[in-house]
Image 1 (cartoon, rainbow, N blue to C red):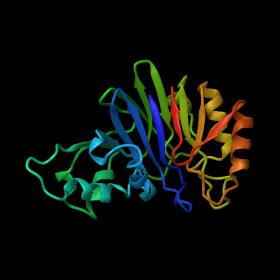
Image 2 (image 1 turned 120 degrees about the vertical axis):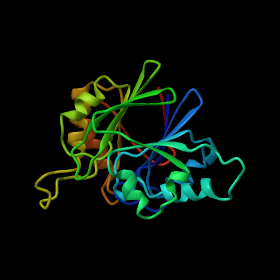
Image 3 (image 1 turned 90 degrees about the vertical axis):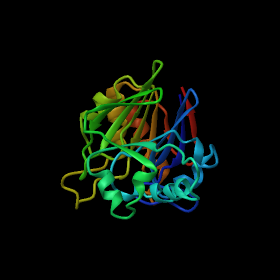
Image 4 (image 1 turned 180 degrees about the vertical axis):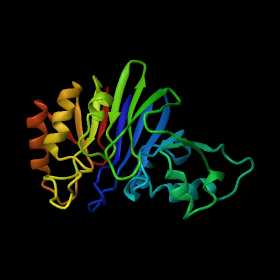
Length: 246
């Protein structure tokens, strides 16, 4: 199994970067997980657009799905005979209806599959177990399993024990750490700080922790240091182009 980071910006991309987007590959199957701003451009550094086999979107916040629209255009035009098959798109309740408000022809390219929080779905070689994350809109944490390899993705979340269960024993956990400290305006935290990300990864017993979705203006050395101290081991900071195999 291979993970390629297409975008790791929390909320918005820094110069030359992209918002959340990840390419997960196994046995020649390419799954694009979250389609944040700019991730489509970086995707093409690794595969052709026509080589995407399936899509998964964790939730309907725009920094996780906006590149669905340019990807739609690339698949929809020019019209071909026969048209390529529709791509399976897995997303939580409300995501597809939300996206249709801007482009009504999306069903001509994508085959929507609504995934209830906690439901399991299958895509190519992947069995994907989901869990509800602590976020203002329905959000899927995802656990990808294939041939004995396990990869977990927190998506966006505040502190929740669901993340420990989701990532239990995973080879790698891709975990958000948006804030350096919880803002005083967030009495019900809906993002993690680095020490929380590291603590959840340690409790889950994961083999490797990769920190992502960091607010672009945060000090990255502090982010990695705080996460590593809580995790008790080295931590990898997700950056565009990072490749991880296990």
